[in-house]
Length: 166
Length: 189
Image 1 (cartoon, each protein chain N blue to C red):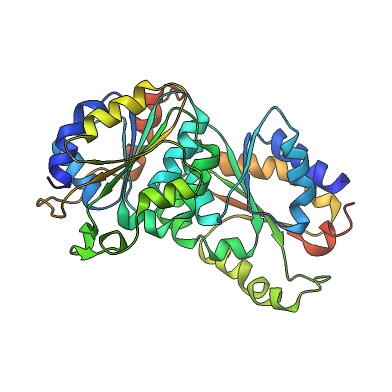
Image 2 (cartoon, rainbow over the protein chains, first blue to last red):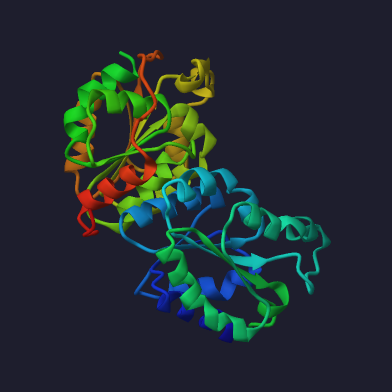
């Protein structure tokens, strides 16, 4: 719970006040925290691409949105990221559980893990890769950076960082 | 009645609300009829008009109308479940259902075969789902906006067919900034 709490605290400190998620086991604690947080909006959504649309609308309404998802969700959302969020320069934070990184027990997750950073790089999305607790301190300033440059930004949280966050 | 006729009929209602308008001919026809700062024209991301409008309705109090098409809803059908469970009362989804992919040459969609979007929306949890003719749409839209306790999904059944239009000549940042300024939460411009 300590890691999850630190991530949410830092996102909130960075100004993020609207949260969506497509669930992941590694995001479960954060979802619990957000479901009980009266200060911010939180909802689950069925699919990441749809979530990109909802985040775009929330930004138009002057919120600073975040969508939490597995890295597989980036694959589901490429067109929405490019032809909506980037076309209209909309800041959205992607909080990504980085499945398929070392520690991952499900071999099939390795495929998307191998290309996740390449996709984000191709899309010119700034990345913050968190593999240890220390790096979580950068989340608030990194989120603010997304708002300043009016761009989606991606925070990748490694499997081993999240797995023992009981 | 085709889409252009319908948009002409509802334009006076649209002027007083925040409008998210679907990519392609719906946006181009609306722009041709009347360009307003409170119209957000989609230039990409087919399928997401309903979702953008939902996020906007959840974030501020003004009434939001998402203008969508049958082809686009078929592409993002999970949106109806999210709307059914989460849409606030300041949200109306207007699906212009002409049974065809108008922007790409009027190929038939599944709503011209077996799929009934009204049944899908009801099954997805949307409570106030209205299927009506183009003529009845003005009345149904007014009812939806006047009801301060419920969100609505209106499926307007019309004929296919388009008018000649040009691409929207506005750049995306202009569309974004004047729309956000209209809402009144940003000071710049």
